[in-house]
Amino acid sequence: MTKKHHTSTTHHLALRVCEIGQLFNSMDPTPFINKDLDRDAEDYIESWAAGYSSDSRFQITIHLEVWPEGQDPSITLSEAIHNHFAYKGERTKHILRQLLRQGRTSLLIGIVFLSLCLLGANALASLGNHPGYTIAEQSLTIVGWVAMWRPMQIFLYEWWPLLVRVRLYKRLSQAHIHTTHGK
Image 1: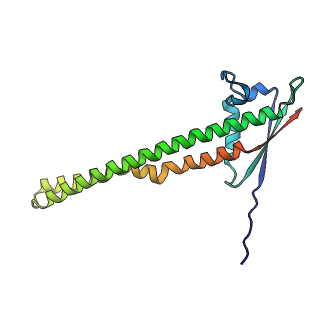
Image 2: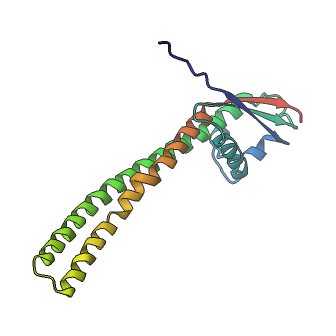
Image 3: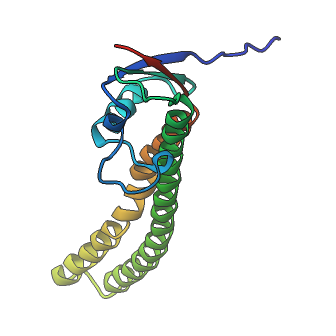
């Protein structure tokens, strides 16, 4: 049996801007290669890249109408875009770790609380078939299971979109950036 080697596809995005400053947040005082991307540019790049499979690679071509005098901005732009998405990936990883830590804590609390509720419900059930006991028994059972809602929400639904974003930011931080002069 032979294995098929899947080659990833490279997708191309063309950004057209008048000058370099349009790509970056003008309120960010950090040095150029550490600047945040402009929110609109960042959203545009992310939404474009999110539409492709997780094994895709990216090439971003930036068309500059006004070429800076005496310098080729290609390396600087490439580093700045790579740094931006690498930083976003690290921030998102941190958020994911915090969420999973919160999920583990919530799960532990939920299991202890559920156990206490079920023990209480069993104790009430052993007292007899009085309607008040039955209502209290059922209420404890329901409340105990409701306490498990948040950990289950985290572990079933909330963690994986963050992981998808981490992977997207990693691919964007490795995108090939090409800069050209003109429209």
